[in-house]
Image (cartoon, rainbow over all chains, first blue to last red; front, side):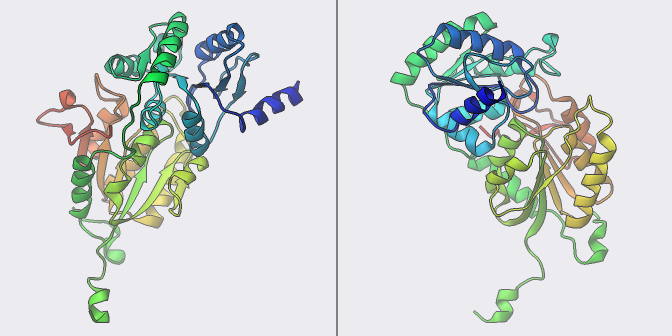
Length: 191
Length: 161
């Protein structure tokens, strides 16, 4: 059992994924993990790789890891044709930076999947953006993945990996205007 | 240009601490790196794997105390205090969440740093709980949503996306 698990984990380092499922680094998300495991079972010809965080449900029909580094995460996103994820900004930003279509299932506070319903708000804000496909519930996943797969083949979009210059410039100037510390007298800055 | 000019003023580069918790908070902080280009910047977050996002730069790791996890709080406060004592940053900038709020409070109240709170772009309907509390400890108190900006704060300077 452990060996099979290790093989599956080893498998994630090679090959090219079609569907990359990710629930983020902070909380488990069994609803998404379980639904996508069933999806993988029903679609044996699709390759599915999942990063499941602390999810209690252990996938049986897709390759999975609990946690990966940011570099490996970016590599997984680049390799994938479609991302399926919670509505976390880190995942969404990485997907759009790399021009990959993303299917979102927002976490819900009522199901103890997050502390607040901000993922519903995020998903609602982004639902009309090109390349972003929002599920109202887990039973929308199949149709949204189909839409995203079609989009992946026909459309190209991506954004830069830095914030707009106007914003970074304003922060840079604010930092430059801060009083300087000098020696130990500057230990407690007077501002 | 003579060597005396190269030496210039005693110190011009500001020391800054850029801190956030994990996931989207960290990704948003990384998108702001250009704003720190003329500073001595040290980073702090909750997982050592983030070091590969800031190659060649120092990254402190602090314990990931969420608002629901009260036991980790004293450890976190001690870690942050030691980082601030060692680095004495002139500016602390953060994209949230709870651990960064405590860093901001310590930096402002004890070390008198300039502080910048940038509420996560995920909070598009109202400010986060940490973000609302950050008001008292922020010199720049920012939302990434124009509709959440108010004349008495928070301010909108743009969004990382």
